[in-house]
Length: 235
Length: 224
Image (cartoon, rainbow over all chains, first blue to last red; front, side, top):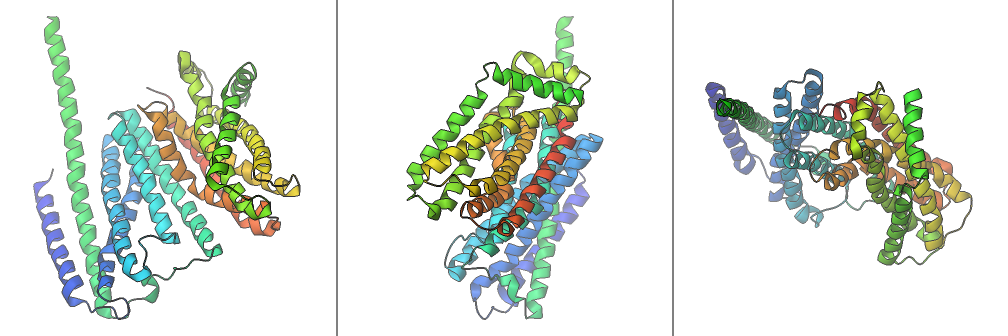
């Protein structure tokens, strides 16, 4: 892996994340209606952004893998799915923490919550496949197909879940995002947090991707050694 | 087209000459509906139309997970799948044949399940069922399209039987939501306009997964 790129991306993530934490806890004014708990919004939204981006990347990597057949695309898709899953979990957790005091419930079947949960289940299945199967080109193709199909399913999920909830009377549908951010400091904090989480995502992606590439190389070397050993045994 | 017809004819004949899939599928649907009656304890009548529709869709999903993968997995025995792949048969045609066979089996099981649902939930045999029929048919087609593609994957992975529902059910969610809503409304006697929007989602889902399956099937079947 490129050490310099690692250092730069890691440093950038550190600086941006420190700024995001400072702005979230000190700089940004407390929201009038919701109070202190609204600050979780500046972590919640970037997590969602990263999760959706990562899952999009899984599908794109899947298409390129099926098209070109190069293992790098498979490793990229795998790394993105793992990291996307972590951030998708964080979206659900931070959302629940916020919802308890504001909606006085941990969970409600609001359209966005439901969609995120379905997404979490979809990519959970994808990772289960990867965990249960061996590392072969065949399984890589399977994973690519599932990544593509899952992404294609998402728009239909969004439409159907929205219809499901607008037809049915929902008790709680207003969300923080609906109010808009009145204070420019809020917008600035959100933007910095988005940049910080994007940098964190890219850094983690690079590290994980490099690990997977290394593992592939190690596998190739081990196979070569085995072959050499077998050949030596024949003599 | 000839290849498609040949594979489909073979699958149907296999089932007619003592295949147990269909019997097992209908028996499973019956059992699930019985379980749902115990679990939900419906009072009966039109008031429970939504409950009945929900129970029917649970039966459809569970029977679909087990039933539709059988059609493809049957080819594993004796290495038939290798012969199919080696034959000049187009992979897309193979997918369509397997999908059609799975759909026919699911549709028969669903027809039986609808009759049982009417009996168990104290509903009436009337025009409402006719309005529900296209909803169920579209749902079965979507599930068959999805499960045929996924079964080609999970059939070749360790513990794949467990994996199939984990992958299929989340993907099926949009069709499930639309199907349950549309079936419930149809059973309660709602006008066609009320279920039209759900039918649109079901059609979109079916088109999406049938085309995705046709396009992607060649990548999951084939070289070991």
